[in-house]
Length: 340
Image (cartoon, rainbow, N blue to C red; front, side, top):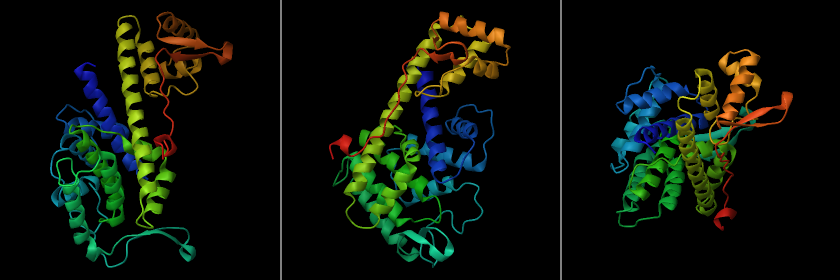
């Protein structure tokens, strides 16, 4: 891949991870603003101003990607918390652990019949629990006294951090960033596996697995589920990469052969990602995307087929057009797929 394409793919992956990890918590950010902020944090020119939430999570993703070898200690954790909570004014503490006297519970249901899914340690215990966690992180690192395989370490680290639940808010986003860091440390180079996207697609399972694992000390089931989700995320990232390579090759072969309308429609189809433009592109879709009349749409689409950019299926109103690149759908990976 050309260096520019590699850079674009990395930024795209960081943007998706930042958006998805926030969406898991019910916070829907502006995708373009997140991407623009990532560009800015990487020292590149950005022409869109980002809101505080977008800027904060973007800064967190860039730090995760760029500084995998940096020590992960309390100072860095508090810095991540400040990034994740950027712009928030409703929290008692930003640069420190929670301090309220009430127990930290995750509940659901009406007030008269609430269900407690999880209860974290009281605030007074948090500093000592986190001290033990940091010691474990150092000992189990690739160059530590008791190194663990990356998948095992990331899985244990995630459930441990979420069980401590050291902050009023932001524990999920920071916990997933810690897991990404541990996975990257296992390869000793900057990567993003993209686990948040898979956790978002399997959100109900994700929360249920976290809840089940917090009820006892045997986390085997959680580790198997986590490993499957990480491998699924890796496959999805590989599919995106293959798709972008195919996209680059196709657009390069079509250079100088397309008008602006056709380029716009193709780029819109590519935005749908490696699983393809849902239902295929119709002439009506093309008219909506480009703003041209039916006769022009028909002519443009026929030229795209002739140029090898699209294939045609169906007849008349059922006619649909598809990109001539291989599509890559990724199925769920379970414990059975891992031999568990």
